[in-house]
Length: 501
Image (cartoon, rainbow, N blue to C red; front, side, top):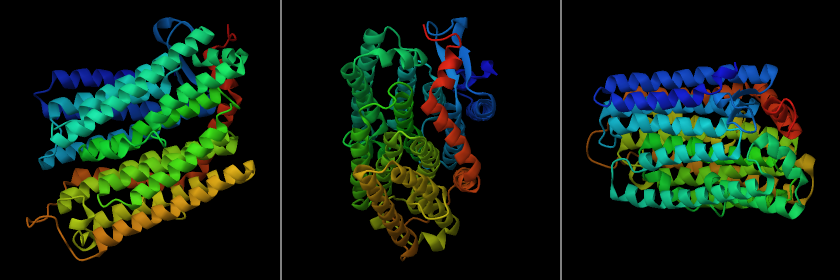
């Protein structure tokens, strides 16, 4: 099984090379891209089963053992992230293929889109599997390089302008991350995560805190936590629908994953817990207040994306098994639901000709299927029982109650208020876009989205509902992952079976 660990990275990269060489054969390009992502999803499921039953799966690249060589490791957390991200990227790819068949004038160039999309997928999977800080940095850079291309596809003025902001912020965060990697190496002599779990404990408290805060600053920008999130609502809305959807679902979650991994493995019981609780509360409230003020659907859901990052940081800040369980569950839930909503917004744009709430209406009558596939994930995001969003929030609130103290209590109140305001935002969109009298943006006849676009979106809606149906088993897996994260021993022993040198 250890030979499978590298496949989620290698297969998309090979697919990117093949699709680039076959740029003049779009049908073959599409077949290769879909095959690569189906293979990645299959391997991810196999790795999750193996990690859950027998522990982390490790491979040493080039046969060089850790801590000298590059290590890829799939523990339960990484495998969970792989499975959900692979499912999401596959559905978004199918959606984009359908969009290309529909020829709506906002379609990414085929010769660029497929190889770049697969490179993005490889960067995401490499970040999840990375066993050392520098390889994690490489994963970030791979996905960011691909995202620079995707976010500016089409070359419109708005995309170039917002893409420039995105590039500048991404480069800044990467510089901070690289500086943090250098500082960690200077202080410990290694960047291997398993080895760092031992060596960082021997450092003076002040040095450990400085390293922890530097990494948190870099990851906080990538995860879009307040006050490091101002770039996101201006960057994502201008991209094509499938690009903004995969960005919203995955890119910020890679930052959240990095925070979870470093806070549990490298800095357990660190001094940043209080800071993270404050940041989580501000992210919740400021983000959702921004969503309340929006009239454009893409900007509105960009702000809800920022806001709900706060729930994940809340669980990480608590640091308990219950808190980490809730955080991991909510990450998986949010990847699926946020991606779905951005795909639905793309369908609304096709059907009504706009994403501006002031220019659309009556969609429930003319597009009842679209109304359903918006309503379900919107209520899930708001946390209406019995959806997975409700279960994830309850889990986090219970962890906050168990932790006790005024600050976790304040976070529970902020989380409840955010959930209510999210329900208000979702209801407002429903009432205006779907329920009121028709107000199509143009006088042209309404366009029906291709079946593949609708089918891919429905598949993600079904995945969100499946998380509700299998919430019990899924919570058991996330709880096991949280226990392993707290213990650290399974991860360290898998990488360094003979002990840390």
